[in-house]
Image (cartoon, rainbow, N blue to C red; front, side):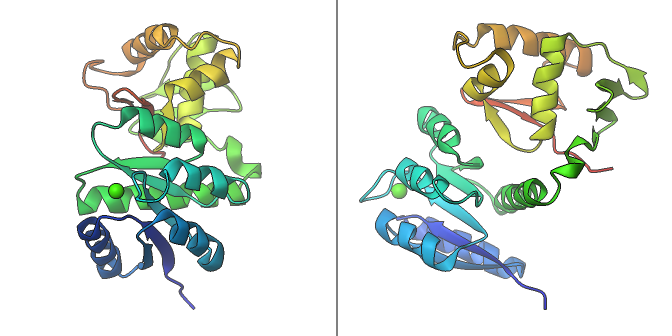
Length: 237
Ligand code: CA
C-alpha cells in the first residue's frame, strides 16, 4: 500500500508549527507529528523514526544543534533546519553538524514542500544508488559526466581547471543542497587548508564566467549569502 511520508516537526512557536502541519497534511503526501521542545523531540525521533525532521534551532530547553549531533550518532535521516534570517552562523553550524538543509523564516508553502522533496529524494539516492552515483548530472543544458570528467554546456565542452572541476562536481553531486564554505574548502583543499573563503570565491568567479550567461544572475550555482553555494537540482535526465 502507498505509505505517507512521516515528518516530525520540532518547533516551539505554535503558529509556525500549525502552519507547517496544515501545509503538509493538505498536500496529501505527508503525515506529521510535532514536539515543542528538544527533549520530546529527541524522544520522538527515536520512537517514531520519522522519514524527515523539521527542526527549529531556538528551542526552550536545548539548542537544536544538539539534536542534530545526537541524531547523527546513529541515523542519517534528513534534517531540515528552520531558522531566522539573521542566524547565518547557526545555519552553518547546523549544516556542519549534519543538517541536510535549512529554510529561512518566513517561508512559503512552495519553498517548504520543495525543500522537503529534495531532502527526501537525496536521502533515498544515497541509500539506493551507491553504484549509480557516477550517473551524469544534467540540468538546464548543463551536463557533467563524472566518469569522463567532462563538462558540457549546450553541446560545447567547457574547460575547467582541476580545482574548478572539483568544486563543480561536488556541488553537482549534492545538487539542490547547500554546501557550506568550510565543507567545500575542506573537500577541495583538504582539512588543513586555510579557512579563508577568498580562494574559493576567486574560483567560483572563474567558474561562473565559464558557465553562466550572466555571472551576476547565475542560473546554475547560487550563492547562499554568508553560508555557501547551492547548485540547481539535477533533472535526472
Ligand atoms: Ca523557537
